[in-house]
Image (cartoon, rainbow, N blue to C red; front, side):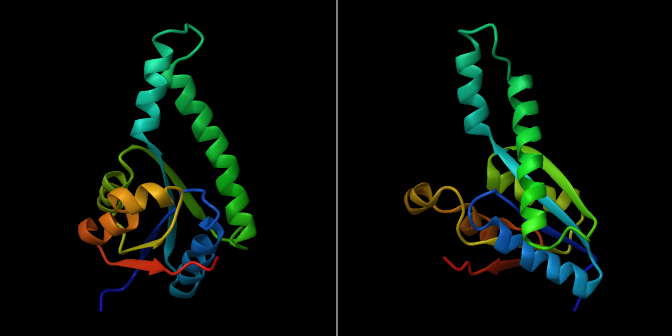
Length: 152
């Protein structure tokens, strides 16, 4: 079995994010591996904001993305603290695009050995209709993927 040096966890800031971070953090600590938390700003949200910005001078996609990253950084820090992972050195990465595509690409770009993610997230209804990000990652992940069964 290949040694696990770098673990990536997909954190969507849903109600289940703390559980996923807690599990990924525990694994990283036990394996003495680096931990990277990746959050994806969905491209469809950016496109919607871009359409609105065409009608209002006060809105810009750049400001929207900066605001999103600032707010998500704050929320991620809260998740890390709640998951009792504050003592770990966690790299935080933001990506913009289609979530499953960006997560798969991040796994390649960041040269990770394992991806840890939950089976449920923000889009439970969309997941039923179109397939969840986790399901798509199972089919496309370039590295082993550990699915965390979330407790509701």
